[in-house]
Amino acid sequence: MQNNYPVEFGPVTSRARGRSARTNTSPATEEQMQRCSRKGRAMLPVAAMSVVALGAAQARASVVLIESWENTLDGWEAPSTNLGSNSTFTSSFSTTTGVTNGSYSLAMTGSVAPNYGQMLAGPSTMALTNLLADSSSVSLDVYVPAAAFGYYVAIDIDMQNAAFGANGGFVSLDGYIYQSATIGGETTITVPVTAAQDATLAASGDPTALFVQVGGNAPSSGSNTMYFDNLRATTVPEPASTSMLGLAAIGLLGRRRRAT
Image 1 (cartoon, rainbow, N blue to C red):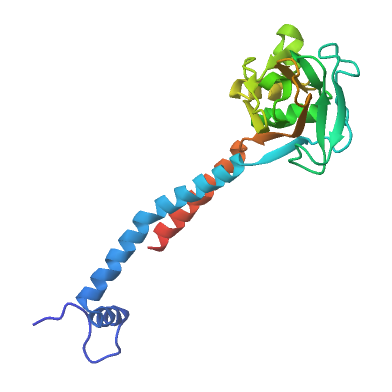
Image 2 (image 1 turned 30 degrees about the horizontal axis):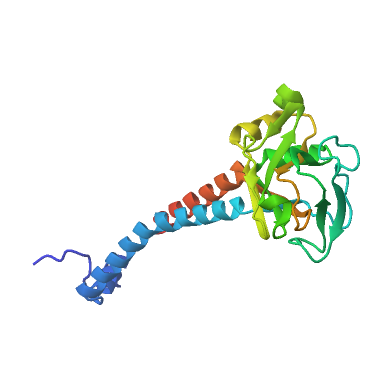
């Protein structure tokens, strides 16, 4: 009978060595190895996509501090300076109440009901334009003591950039909803920065300012003070970063397939 591989009396060829190596491995073991290899190839795309998803989630979680009022207004205007609305309110700082970032919070005290006008106006800068162009939301921590302001205070966060056109570029980030603050506790007010607003800011060459507007009831027998701290933006991932993660995962997948 003729052999199927060239082994006679001479040196063992590579083909024979390969056949000998295979015959030394039991069929069950070889089948298990092939099954594990197929399973590994099947799981690699899932793992690669998990890497991309994890990287994107981490990028979305990036938070950038805008202001924490560390014993200074730091360029912000309060009603007691140049703002016409809520003109009876005065500013001070606290190290014991409403502090959520750093060592101080900004305290605003008034003797009448806040009139849904500007309580705080921030400085206008290009740095803020660039930050908000890459952001999905803006948040502010607000503490209102028990029984303060007739048990009702509402907060609105706004921005101003000439690129928005109407009303001097003044825009309420949540459409003047005026979110209620918890009386007797801490509240985080979060407003969105939409994709359309991101695009407008990205194309703008003008500086941007943020504003905090406050409405509520007349002060009661409780405290007439509210506290602000930790004004911050949550940024969205850079498209380039997410693309690089995707390309890395695809490259890993291609390399694994070539190796198998």
